[in-house]
Image 1 (cartoon, rainbow, N blue to C red):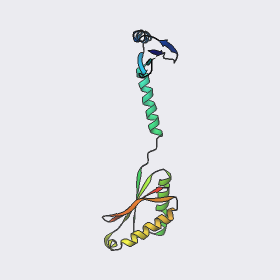
Image 2 (image 1 turned 180 degrees about the vertical axis):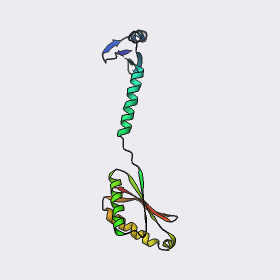
Image 3 (image 1 turned 135 degrees about the vertical axis):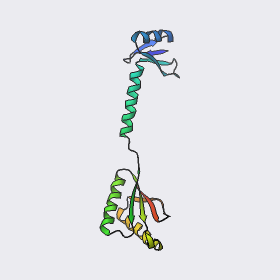
Image 4 (image 1 turned 90 degrees about the horizontal axis):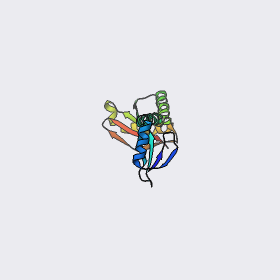
Length: 153
């Protein structure tokens, strides 16, 4: 097997017994790096330190990774124009952060008899959000709520 030292220098091809003796003399572990190579490649390293570095590297990668979340904005049918502008601005901020947004229009009491007002409100929201935002899927009525998902193009 081909043996690599702890500092990365190639020690050459030797038997597994000789490689194990070298690792034991150095107070380190013998780890098989590439078993499919011809001859197999092993490295003399400190296994605990190696595992610790791998764990830290994975934690760093996980911290830097940004996952797309689903955020939710709720609003009623009787929302004022300025409040609607504020909600639309918040939706755009969430979309810029890379999240998808679920917009929920809530119907209260007798408003359920006028579902077309909810559709008009949905169209106004999409008009305010602009061309770079699209509805993901189709809008649906579930109970007393009209919901639709928006995302960046």
